[in-house]
Amino acid sequence: MKSKGKQERQLIEGKPALIVIDIQKSTFIDDSEVRSIDNMPGYRDRMIAARDLVDAAHENDIPVIFIQEIHRADLIDFGRELDGDEDVHCLEGDPRTEIAVNEMGFRKGDYIIPKRRYSAFFGTDFEILLRGLKVDTLILCGGLTDVCVHYTFVDGHQSDYFCRVVEDCVGGSSFEAHEAALRAMEYLQTGAIQKRADVIEAMSA
Image 1 (spheres, rainbow, N blue to C red):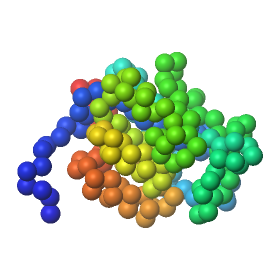
Image 2 (tube, one colour):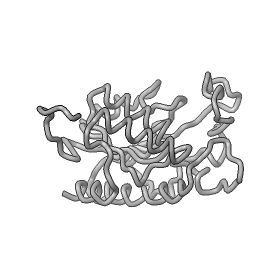
Image 3 (tube, rainbow, N blue to C red):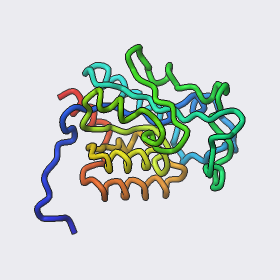
């Protein structure tokens, strides 16, 4: 049951920024049948679709912030990350770890935030950048829906940002995990889950 007195929110409240989470070269150059991190069917196509968001943000002078998961080659900063289903991934010096700059249309003036943990907020200067840009709404795309997107969303929510997830431009470790994460995020902010076409229309408005 929804709260009766809930305030209606716009898709974009105040100033937006597009947050491109972990769309890295591995998505486009690693065709291994067994990968270090499981991807749901259609994952790559969803990442390719995120290029439309990047282009729309550029056309409308909306800041684009690329989040890059990257770990030291000696594995010292993985912590508990390898205790679950994930194997070693995103190492420094591995070409698969680089931001997919060509595929995503990275431009001079876009930002890159490297991170050692799942959330883009944890142990990074992400929030300092957001404050400097005077951002109110975070538009999230990329992967994984159930891990880095979800945890970045939660930290953004707890830091009082309006958070929107473009459901057809995110992909999870499995379809079931993807769907569950979307429901969990929508629970925190009504209207958080949006479609690409509607987000692009709101950017242009």
